[in-house]
Image (cartoon, rainbow, N blue to C red; front, side, top):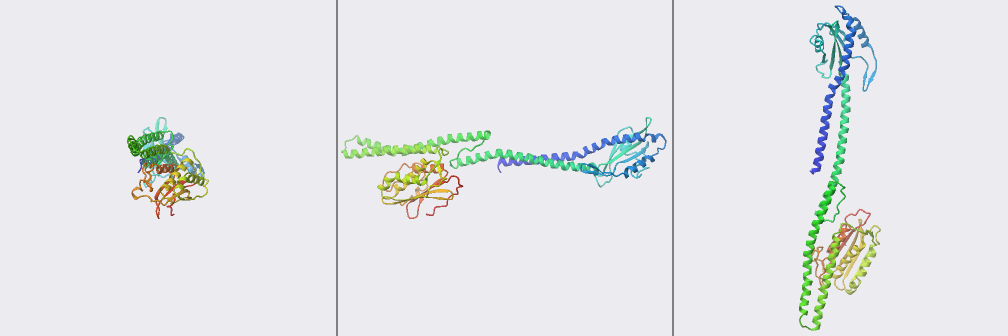
Length: 489
């Protein structure tokens, strides 16, 4: 698993776990807070009732008949009060009154506990002791949500506590509010968590995409492909990409120079040795005909050196480029005609039967015309030079699956098995069939660089019946190029 994916998964787990525990903690804390808010008005109610009952406790035996009548009417009252999600239709408050010894004198709950001793209940016990009396009891032992909160207040006769009035309120309505609040809290927490995760995904993508681009760029460089540094933005990743590009250029430049110096030194040895040998022999007395032959050798080898240097400079300039500089429409038919015309003398001299078949240039074909012309010229020159006198060279172009295919075939000796994997190496060349000098070994390397610079490719192989066939593939701009099938012809 990639490290950035691990970081994102850890982030998801931390956010999800954090919001889950936050919602749980707030949800568990809701009930005590709701009960606290319920307790405060009960305190007021208890003291109001205590004051209203004070006149009844002036006698030794308080008269609670009037209080009972009031509560009977209260319990019979019907109304509708929509309190958020709760519809309240009756009074569910319980009130009981005790004497100074904690004996219940009045119970609004159908006189249920009148005469019972409540002196041990905290609300009555503490109030009779002059303290704040309150208790929370369950109506149903099997139902933890059947809690009733009781708040008591003292009834005074002068400065003496002669009784207690306790107001009870079931917590079931508060539990409905709590359940509704928990639901909203859960939804809010889920929305907030999804929002944070979405923001994290955006940040992950923002950081991950440049890293993916940089990884693909590094892999392309490792594979030896021509790749340009992608746009990574003006941030730390962009700076790292720029540093990698600078390092690549520096390393490739060093390696490039070393390879070229080694290869060029090797290739220069042969013509220099020939020139040096001819020059040393010219210092001796010899017939004029022989002297002329050595001078011709010197001129030939000097021209070979010049060609080698020129080709090296052209290829070096091309290999350093990362992209095309001057795109222009290319009339492929006209380009092929120009190439054939430029090699006309060589074709005529060797009596080559030239066959050229190309379609009208597709409008989407764009590239650097000069480079493309040089590439096709190199391929056709090779075909002509390796063909026997009176031989046959075929050059045709066609479009296949969004690719412009140019196929050049000859009927020469073909490519030896030992050379098939090296034909595109710099300075590697084969002896011409007519015994002529080897080429510079840079022509096919130049073709390969031009093809790859245009997003295409080049193959060189033997064909059935003898000879070699070169296939140059170039993508047509404006189309999604599909890799062409192997040529059946």
